[in-house]
Length: 239
Image (cartoon, one colour):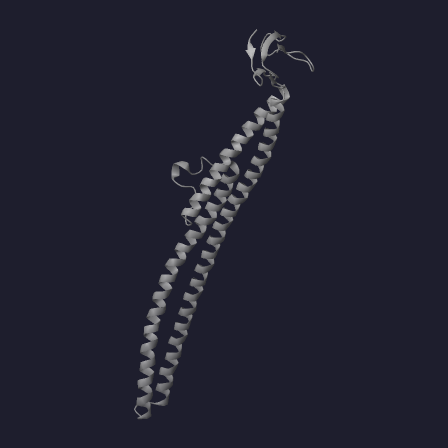
């Protein structure tokens, strides 16, 4: 005898397979949405601080990341730490090589001045040919030492440049891994969302609505959970 208005929901009929699949999809979708948020968080941190690992403060570092991102980060962090350690060693070597080169450069300048003065004295006949030859030979040795020191310094700076390039490559790979994962998650989210929307529409078709204003004349299902066969009567209304 209850009055109903056209469009009022009279009964909700649940198809078990649709409902169970919808629940599974909603759980999977919630997990993916969480993963997507976490990957976006890491990427934002990388964009705001290119020299960071993108994980933010220690308390939110590895814990929020899914297994894929965590394994990728462990590999990136090991590679990055190794390169940074090597760069630290190279910085020390470069500083030492620069000092050696500069000391030898001073020696070279002094040796060149000494030979130039010796040549003037030699022209005046105050030193022998053998003496001037020895002094010139010593100058060539210092020049060779200076060249070797310069080559050593250049070798170290080249190694530094290679390590910097490797660091940039490792960081770019880390970002690419994150972006690839983000794209994959977004694709999965879109697929699951489409399937979930379709299931919800399918579920909605099982709901019974009053076709017109009227009064409920009879209810054929007396309890929640009752099984309704295809074509079975649920309720009757009288306009």
